[in-house]
Length: 434
Image (cartoon, rainbow, N blue to C red):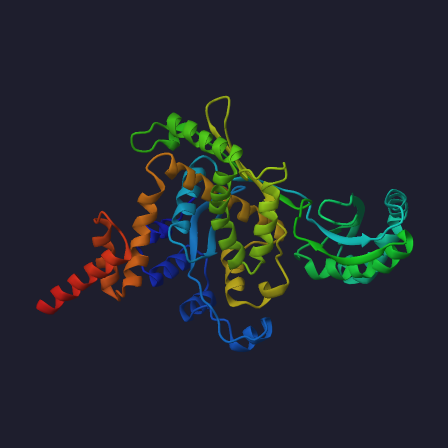
């Protein structure tokens, strides 16, 4: 549960928060020094990460609290510019922790690579040939990347999909070969891409077709993570709403997002607020995760909510989130980016599977908080309270003016930039008079 050192964390200064994390045993002296200096990406490293590099672009880096996942407490780093996301995740996790925390299930970590073949003389016959020569294909793939095999991973299975021609759109038929690969602790993009290019010559000879490309798929349907929670209705009461009312309204909000893609997109965007923020903080590819998650939301043929909220027989609220999470615990910027290394130290995760559990739980907490606010007090009350600080900064406030202007904005009917600028002028005018 939450350490006493972390209570009222939001009210502390950044230095006080760092000290609190040290007192709670989460940060050591070296980590504290790194945080105080700033998680700067060295120019030399940045220049070698991308082309035409000019500088670096910073985002706020903070932590969400109260996460109890599979019986273990976590402080979760997040990199994000949007107000209220970290606060919402922490608030949702706190309620869920009181109910026993999150429970997660991680599917065996298998990634998918594809070879697209065109001009195949007989796709049905080619499919049978490929499946009957599966062992040879697996051997060719593993020979292309023997190091992953030595560590216990490698290509495990072959499957085939026949995509018929679309005469209306003028699209030819494709024969698609899937290679299912265990990539262990790595996300595995480079491993899979190497393997796919390694099997292309053999597949072309076997089928008589011509390879268009060989590449991984970010739609990692063999690498699913599920987070679940069970919350007694009594913990859901909010203002004038009883716990039963909040539970039922939460379920109705999910049902709305399930049947209406216009709502589902916004619902899932809120989920990805939390997921993208921790994926980015961990040094993983948040674009790949987002693309795969949204594809998974459309697997039925209609875009739907990624989460599910239902009522248990005893009246508890049951929440669940499942999505593809092909993330890595090693490789890429995870090993050298200062913020990614800090995230690994703060979370203390020991495997990619454990990181998947954390990420999925953050997404479920984020959705719980957002829907709970929407169906009770409304989304703007909490959001605009935090947004007032951003407005104050945008208006030009500095130092103590930021907090002063933020408090004044909370009392205004119209909280916008024009109001903030007017109030700031009044503050400075009063200071001049004094």
